[in-house]
Length: 498
Ligand SMILES: Cc1cc2nc3c(=O)[nH]c(=O)nc-3n(C[C@H](O)[C@H](O)[C@H](O)COP(=O)(O)OP(=O)(O)OC[C@H]3O[C@@H](n4cnc5c(N)ncnc54)[C@H](O)[C@@H]3O)c2cc1C
Image 1 (cartoon, helix red, strand yellow):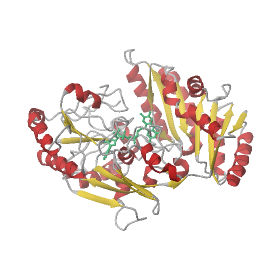
Image 2: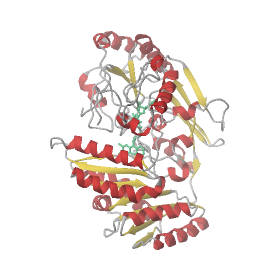
Image 3: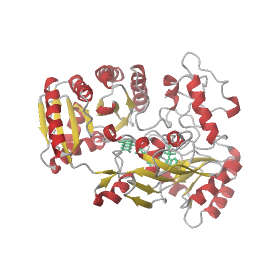
Image 4: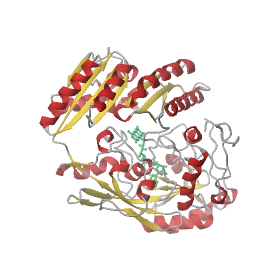
């Protein structure tokens, strides 16, 4: 693993491995425990593929009762646990630890209830994001948050990462679409937060749980809101001679009070890579390409198209195509949706970053990124959820060249520092995980971090759930408040910054 220190393996736990495996097999009989090294290889990494680690053992429970028994067992013996959904996290959230049980939730794959009256679906956490839409689409409904990984990622993972996608600009992130969860605490207690009802009194624990990256509890059931499919959806493909003009157009569209169903931008390298890959019909002469989707009743969509076209022209657009059929709309999106693999074809490796900035800072951040690209000697292709100000710079590098991965990581860290500097945040939707863990002090003060860790202590006082993720260093709950940051650096020389 490059430059990343995880918690040291607990020697006692490692030496008790055979006993732990046997005990877990009693809780989850049949094929629920995987301990052969060659079989565990399938779980040694997640979407952040530069990092790999075999777990102590893999366990695949099927029922909440089994999850409860596993966690209680581990809690009583001080054994660490890393929850995992489909393993598509791009920030290393599901990266195993050598001395931790990897709790894989993929066998929780049933839709439990489809309730059109209350416009919600109750699903087990291993159901894929797209699986929810598939279950209701024949009846004219869908689940709005749509990560590009939706064919594979689990709804439990979406809750843990507060995942987003193209349609979150108008319809909100996972946090805005999850109504309730059943979850198991590290001590084995099963609790329910929220439900089909709109809101409940008391602290918003569901809000805390959403985006908690597997550090507070294991989600065993999820209730999500479903929406009626819009009557019409049409997309505009708008080309600009500069990214700055594209960025200004985005700001002006939002400033005019228009909230598109989706608004995505790609820069020249991403446009060319996507066009070569899927032939979506993208204009190749422009520096920035904006895809704006407007949805709703037909008359409203037609009206908004006219407004957006006029705003684009005022910002110097050189091309503007409007989809005239569903097939064409999907073709416009095909290039954007395939942008990551398309970029994968023009470089041996790429490193996908995820920062968020205030929309108006886009030109400044793009200029800063260009400077960094020259400084590091690495190319970058940009794909943005432009409406949300969520950037996905893809840094191109070659892992076979000594030092290139480290260079790409340093470049990525500088991009995130730039995002924070202009008033943005370290992550838009991919989470902190291990990837951005050591950058947390760039964004949060000591008091901020302490308060967040107190929340962790309230759920998992022994810090056994997904340790080494999100927080640069977890202190014992009783010690909180004693740690200080010196000159913006954490006083932990044993944790290299990446
Ligand atoms: C090609 C590609 C495109 C992507 N595009 C997007 C995108 O557009 N938007 C976006 O937001 N993300 C995107 N992602 C990132 C990723 O798909 C999301 O973060 C997703 O929500 C992870 O779900 P998962 O089931 O794979 O979770 P995992 O990767 O298995 O786990 C992610 C985190 O959730 C925790 N976790 C998983 N299940 C549970 C559970 N049941 N209870 C408690 N904690 C749990 C894990 O401990 C870990 O911290 C993309 C990833 C890839 C590979």
